[in-house]
Length: 313
Image (tube, rainbow, N blue to C red):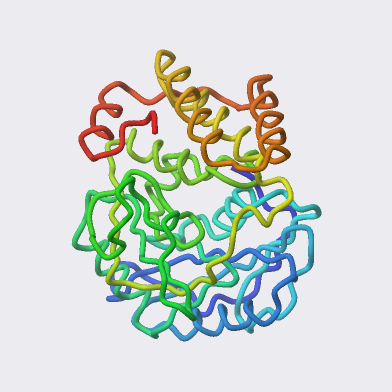
Protein backbone atom coordinates (compact mmCIF):
# COMPACT_ATOMS: atom_id res chain seq x y z
CA UNK A 1 0.00 0.00 0.00
CA UNK A 2 1.12 3.57 -0.59
CA UNK A 3 2.84 5.13 2.39
CA UNK A 4 2.32 8.73 3.43
CA UNK A 5 5.03 11.17 2.44
CA UNK A 6 4.39 13.82 5.08
CA UNK A 7 2.25 13.36 8.17
CA UNK A 8 1.10 16.12 10.49
CA UNK A 9 0.26 14.44 13.80
CA UNK A 10 -2.48 16.45 15.42
CA UNK A 11 -4.38 15.11 18.44
CA UNK A 12 -7.14 12.66 17.63
CA UNK A 13 -10.68 13.93 18.34
CA UNK A 14 -11.27 10.89 20.52
CA UNK A 15 -7.80 10.49 22.01
CA UNK A 16 -6.39 7.11 22.94
CA UNK A 17 -9.09 4.52 23.45
CA UNK A 18 -9.29 1.24 25.29
CA UNK A 19 -11.26 -1.18 23.12
CA UNK A 20 -12.03 -3.39 26.07
CA UNK A 21 -13.86 -0.64 27.96
CA UNK A 22 -15.25 1.68 25.28
CA UNK A 23 -18.83 0.80 24.28
CA UNK A 24 -18.48 2.79 21.06
CA UNK A 25 -17.16 1.53 17.75
CA UNK A 26 -13.78 2.90 16.78
CA UNK A 27 -13.68 4.25 13.24
CA UNK A 28 -10.79 5.60 11.19
CA UNK A 29 -12.08 8.01 8.55
CA UNK A 30 -10.15 8.88 5.38
CA UNK A 31 -11.10 11.94 3.33
CA UNK A 32 -9.17 13.11 0.24
CA UNK A 33 -8.84 16.65 -1.00
CA UNK A 34 -7.24 18.61 -3.82
CA UNK A 35 -8.57 21.91 -2.42
CA UNK A 36 -10.89 22.21 -5.42
CA UNK A 37 -14.22 21.86 -3.57
CA UNK A 38 -13.99 24.21 -0.57
CA UNK A 39 -17.69 24.55 0.24
CA UNK A 40 -18.70 20.88 -0.29
CA UNK A 41 -15.57 19.82 1.59
CA UNK A 42 -16.45 21.97 4.61
CA UNK A 43 -20.01 20.59 4.62
CA UNK A 44 -18.68 17.04 4.41
CA UNK A 45 -16.34 17.57 7.36
CA UNK A 46 -19.02 19.27 9.45
CA UNK A 47 -21.39 16.34 8.91
CA UNK A 48 -18.64 13.86 9.72
CA UNK A 49 -17.46 15.49 12.94
CA UNK A 50 -21.07 15.82 14.11
CA UNK A 51 -21.47 12.02 14.25
CA UNK A 52 -22.39 10.68 17.67
CA UNK A 53 -22.06 7.31 19.41
CA UNK A 54 -18.80 6.54 17.59
CA UNK A 55 -15.15 7.18 18.37
CA UNK A 56 -13.59 8.88 15.35
CA UNK A 57 -10.02 9.34 14.20
CA UNK A 58 -10.03 11.40 11.03
CA UNK A 59 -7.30 12.03 8.48
CA UNK A 60 -7.44 14.37 5.49
CA UNK A 61 -5.13 13.41 2.64
CA UNK A 62 -3.91 16.26 0.45
CA UNK A 63 -3.35 14.67 -2.95
CA UNK A 64 -0.57 16.94 -4.22
CA UNK A 65 -1.66 19.84 -1.97
CA UNK A 66 -1.47 21.05 1.60
CA UNK A 67 -5.10 20.62 2.74
CA UNK A 68 -7.13 23.76 3.39
CA UNK A 69 -9.83 24.09 6.04
CA UNK A 70 -8.54 21.38 8.39
CA UNK A 71 -10.75 21.23 11.50
CA UNK A 72 -9.08 21.19 14.90
CA UNK A 73 -7.99 17.75 15.99
CA UNK A 74 -7.95 16.24 12.50
CA UNK A 75 -4.74 14.75 11.13
CA UNK A 76 -3.34 15.47 7.70
CA UNK A 77 -1.24 13.56 5.19
CA UNK A 78 0.39 15.50 2.37
CA UNK A 79 1.36 13.69 -0.83
CA UNK A 80 3.86 15.74 -2.89
CA UNK A 81 2.04 14.92 -6.13
CA UNK A 82 -1.45 13.71 -6.98
CA UNK A 83 -1.05 9.94 -6.74
CA UNK A 84 -4.69 9.20 -7.53
CA UNK A 85 -7.67 8.26 -5.41
CA UNK A 86 -6.84 4.67 -4.37
CA UNK A 87 -3.23 5.56 -3.49
CA UNK A 88 -4.48 8.54 -1.49
CA UNK A 89 -6.93 6.34 0.40
CA UNK A 90 -4.15 3.88 1.20
CA UNK A 91 -1.95 6.69 2.51
CA UNK A 92 -4.72 7.88 4.81
CA UNK A 93 -5.52 4.41 6.14
CA UNK A 94 -1.81 3.72 6.68
CA UNK A 95 -1.43 6.95 8.65
CA UNK A 96 -4.04 5.73 11.14
CA UNK A 97 -2.75 2.14 11.35
CA UNK A 98 -1.08 0.72 14.45
CA UNK A 99 -2.12 -0.29 17.96
CA UNK A 100 -4.76 2.45 18.19
CA UNK A 101 -6.26 1.69 14.78
CA UNK A 102 -10.02 1.68 14.57
CA UNK A 103 -12.09 -1.45 14.17
CA UNK A 104 -13.42 0.01 10.92
CA UNK A 105 -12.10 2.23 8.16
CA UNK A 106 -14.63 4.59 6.59
CA UNK A 107 -13.79 6.13 3.22
CA UNK A 108 -15.72 9.32 2.50
CA UNK A 109 -15.69 11.42 -0.67
CA UNK A 110 -15.05 15.08 0.08
CA UNK A 111 -18.37 16.16 -1.43
CA UNK A 112 -20.48 13.57 0.40
CA UNK A 113 -22.58 14.48 3.42
CA UNK A 114 -23.85 12.32 6.29
CA UNK A 115 -27.39 13.72 6.61
CA UNK A 116 -27.99 12.73 10.24
CA UNK A 117 -25.78 12.62 13.33
CA UNK A 118 -26.41 8.89 13.76
CA UNK A 119 -25.65 7.89 10.14
CA UNK A 120 -22.29 6.30 10.87
CA UNK A 121 -23.52 4.61 14.06
CA UNK A 122 -26.39 3.05 12.09
CA UNK A 123 -23.99 1.83 9.42
CA UNK A 124 -21.87 0.18 12.11
CA UNK A 125 -24.97 -1.40 13.63
CA UNK A 126 -25.56 -3.08 10.26
CA UNK A 127 -21.97 -4.37 10.36
CA UNK A 128 -22.62 -5.82 13.82
CA UNK A 129 -25.58 -7.76 12.43
CA UNK A 130 -23.68 -9.05 9.38
CA UNK A 131 -20.43 -10.35 10.79
CA UNK A 132 -19.54 -12.21 7.58
CA UNK A 133 -19.45 -8.97 5.61
CA UNK A 134 -16.06 -7.31 5.23
CA UNK A 135 -17.66 -4.12 3.95
CA UNK A 136 -20.97 -2.35 4.34
CA UNK A 137 -22.27 -0.15 1.54
CA UNK A 138 -24.83 2.54 2.36
CA UNK A 139 -27.27 3.86 -0.22
CA UNK A 140 -25.92 6.95 -1.93
CA UNK A 141 -28.49 9.54 -3.03
CA UNK A 142 -28.33 12.94 -4.66
CA UNK A 143 -29.14 15.55 -1.99
CA UNK A 144 -31.38 17.57 -4.28
CA UNK A 145 -33.39 14.90 -6.08
CA UNK A 146 -33.01 11.92 -3.75
CA UNK A 147 -32.13 9.82 -6.80
CA UNK A 148 -29.74 6.90 -6.42
CA UNK A 149 -27.82 6.42 -9.67
CA UNK A 150 -27.62 2.95 -11.13
CA UNK A 151 -23.82 2.90 -10.78
CA UNK A 152 -24.21 3.53 -7.04
CA UNK A 153 -26.18 0.31 -6.53
CA UNK A 154 -23.52 -2.39 -6.17
CA UNK A 155 -25.23 -5.26 -7.97
CA UNK A 156 -26.31 -6.16 -11.49
CA UNK A 157 -30.03 -5.83 -10.82
CA UNK A 158 -29.97 -2.17 -9.86
CA UNK A 159 -33.55 -1.27 -10.64
CA UNK A 160 -34.59 -1.28 -6.98
CA UNK A 161 -32.10 0.80 -5.02
CA UNK A 162 -33.86 0.10 -1.70
CA UNK A 163 -33.43 -3.68 -1.62
CA UNK A 164 -30.76 -4.80 0.89
CA UNK A 165 -28.61 -7.87 0.59
CA UNK A 166 -25.28 -9.44 -0.24
CA UNK A 167 -23.15 -7.60 -2.82
CA UNK A 168 -19.98 -8.49 -4.70
CA UNK A 169 -18.68 -5.02 -5.60
CA UNK A 170 -18.78 -1.59 -3.96
CA UNK A 171 -19.33 2.10 -4.66
CA UNK A 172 -15.95 2.91 -3.21
CA UNK A 173 -16.42 6.65 -2.61
CA UNK A 174 -18.53 6.00 0.51
CA UNK A 175 -17.94 2.63 2.14
CA UNK A 176 -17.26 1.12 5.58
CA UNK A 177 -14.65 -1.68 5.73
CA UNK A 178 -13.47 -3.72 8.69
CA UNK A 179 -9.86 -2.73 9.34
CA UNK A 180 -8.64 -6.33 9.75
CA UNK A 181 -10.14 -7.37 6.41
CA UNK A 182 -8.85 -4.25 4.66
CA UNK A 183 -5.30 -4.92 5.83
CA UNK A 184 -5.41 -8.62 5.06
CA UNK A 185 -6.59 -7.85 1.52
CA UNK A 186 -3.74 -5.38 1.05
CA UNK A 187 -5.77 -2.20 0.62
CA UNK A 188 -6.68 -0.48 -2.62
CA UNK A 189 -4.72 -1.04 -5.86
CA UNK A 190 -2.91 2.29 -5.66
CA UNK A 191 -1.56 2.33 -9.20
CA UNK A 192 -5.08 2.25 -10.71
CA UNK A 193 -5.22 6.03 -10.07
CA UNK A 194 -9.00 6.14 -10.63
CA UNK A 195 -11.84 3.73 -11.56
CA UNK A 196 -12.47 0.03 -10.82
CA UNK A 197 -10.33 -0.02 -7.68
CA UNK A 198 -13.45 -1.02 -5.74
CA UNK A 199 -13.98 -4.15 -7.84
CA UNK A 200 -10.37 -5.19 -7.25
CA UNK A 201 -10.67 -4.77 -3.48
CA UNK A 202 -14.10 -6.42 -3.34
CA UNK A 203 -12.87 -9.49 -5.20
CA UNK A 204 -9.88 -9.81 -2.87
CA UNK A 205 -12.16 -9.56 0.17
CA UNK A 206 -14.41 -12.26 -1.26
CA UNK A 207 -11.35 -14.39 -1.95
CA UNK A 208 -10.60 -14.21 1.78
CA UNK A 209 -13.94 -15.91 2.38
CA UNK A 210 -15.73 -12.69 3.24
CA UNK A 211 -18.73 -10.92 1.64
CA UNK A 212 -20.18 -7.44 1.24
CA UNK A 213 -23.56 -6.12 2.38
CA UNK A 214 -25.73 -3.34 0.95
CA UNK A 215 -27.63 -1.33 3.57
CA UNK A 216 -30.03 0.96 1.67
CA UNK A 217 -31.80 2.13 4.84
CA UNK A 218 -28.64 4.08 5.68
CA UNK A 219 -28.49 6.98 3.23
CA UNK A 220 -25.53 9.26 2.50
CA UNK A 221 -25.82 12.26 0.20
CA UNK A 222 -23.56 12.74 -2.81
CA UNK A 223 -24.08 14.94 -5.89
CA UNK A 224 -25.15 12.95 -8.95
CA UNK A 225 -22.22 13.84 -11.20
CA UNK A 226 -21.07 12.15 -14.39
CA UNK A 227 -17.74 10.28 -14.01
CA UNK A 228 -17.02 10.96 -17.68
CA UNK A 229 -16.35 14.58 -16.67
CA UNK A 230 -12.83 13.43 -15.78
CA UNK A 231 -10.57 13.89 -18.84
CA UNK A 232 -8.91 10.44 -18.62
CA UNK A 233 -12.20 8.60 -17.97
CA UNK A 234 -12.39 6.41 -21.09
CA UNK A 235 -8.68 5.58 -21.10
CA UNK A 236 -8.47 4.65 -17.42
CA UNK A 237 -11.75 2.70 -17.45
CA UNK A 238 -10.46 0.51 -20.30
CA UNK A 239 -6.92 0.14 -18.97
CA UNK A 240 -8.06 -0.74 -15.47
CA UNK A 241 -10.53 -3.35 -16.74
CA UNK A 242 -7.59 -5.16 -18.32
CA UNK A 243 -5.46 -4.78 -15.21
CA UNK A 244 -8.32 -6.05 -13.04
CA UNK A 245 -8.72 -9.16 -15.18
CA UNK A 246 -4.99 -9.92 -15.23
CA UNK A 247 -4.63 -9.37 -11.49
CA UNK A 248 -7.64 -11.24 -10.14
CA UNK A 249 -9.16 -13.75 -12.58
CA UNK A 250 -8.19 -17.35 -13.28
CA UNK A 251 -6.48 -17.48 -16.67
CA UNK A 252 -9.38 -19.08 -18.61
CA UNK A 253 -11.73 -16.28 -17.54
CA UNK A 254 -9.51 -13.38 -18.63
CA UNK A 255 -10.40 -13.45 -22.36
CA UNK A 256 -14.07 -14.02 -21.54
CA UNK A 257 -14.17 -11.03 -19.18
CA UNK A 258 -12.39 -8.75 -21.63
CA UNK A 259 -14.56 -9.86 -24.55
CA UNK A 260 -17.75 -9.18 -22.57
CA UNK A 261 -16.61 -5.70 -21.56
CA UNK A 262 -15.42 -4.85 -25.05
CA UNK A 263 -18.84 -5.68 -26.47
CA UNK A 264 -20.62 -3.78 -23.68
CA UNK A 265 -18.37 -0.74 -24.11
CA UNK A 266 -18.81 -0.59 -27.87
CA UNK A 267 -22.58 -0.69 -27.36
CA UNK A 268 -22.56 2.00 -24.66
CA UNK A 269 -20.05 4.54 -25.97
CA UNK A 270 -21.79 6.58 -28.65
CA UNK A 271 -18.97 8.94 -29.52
CA UNK A 272 -16.42 7.60 -31.99
CA UNK A 273 -13.78 9.88 -30.49
CA UNK A 274 -14.42 8.53 -26.98
CA UNK A 275 -14.43 4.99 -28.29
CA UNK A 276 -11.02 5.60 -29.87
CA UNK A 277 -9.71 6.77 -26.49
CA UNK A 278 -11.24 3.68 -24.87
CA UNK A 279 -9.38 1.41 -27.30
CA UNK A 280 -6.13 3.25 -26.57
CA UNK A 281 -6.67 2.49 -22.90
CA UNK A 282 -7.38 -1.15 -23.76
CA UNK A 283 -4.09 -1.39 -25.62
CA UNK A 284 -2.29 0.29 -22.75
CA UNK A 285 -3.64 -2.28 -20.34
CA UNK A 286 -2.70 -5.19 -22.60
CA UNK A 287 0.91 -3.96 -22.65
CA UNK A 288 1.25 -4.68 -18.92
CA UNK A 289 1.63 -2.72 -15.73
CA UNK A 290 -1.15 -4.47 -13.85
CA UNK A 291 1.09 -5.35 -10.92
CA UNK A 292 1.22 -8.57 -8.95
CA UNK A 293 -1.03 -11.31 -10.24
CA UNK A 294 -3.01 -13.07 -7.52
CA UNK A 295 -6.02 -14.77 -9.14
CA UNK A 296 -9.05 -15.69 -7.10
CA UNK A 297 -9.77 -19.33 -6.48
CA UNK A 298 -12.38 -21.23 -8.45
CA UNK A 299 -14.27 -21.58 -5.18
CA UNK A 300 -14.50 -17.77 -5.06
CA UNK A 301 -15.70 -17.72 -8.66
CA UNK A 302 -18.47 -20.10 -7.61
CA UNK A 303 -19.37 -18.02 -4.55
CA UNK A 304 -19.57 -14.82 -6.61
CA UNK A 305 -21.73 -16.61 -9.18
CA UNK A 306 -24.10 -17.90 -6.51
CA UNK A 307 -24.28 -14.36 -5.10
CA UNK A 308 -25.62 -13.15 -8.46
CA UNK A 309 -22.57 -11.76 -10.22
CA UNK A 310 -20.15 -14.17 -11.91
CA UNK A 311 -16.79 -12.41 -12.36
CA UNK A 312 -17.14 -12.06 -16.13
CA UNK A 313 -19.70 -9.22 -16.09
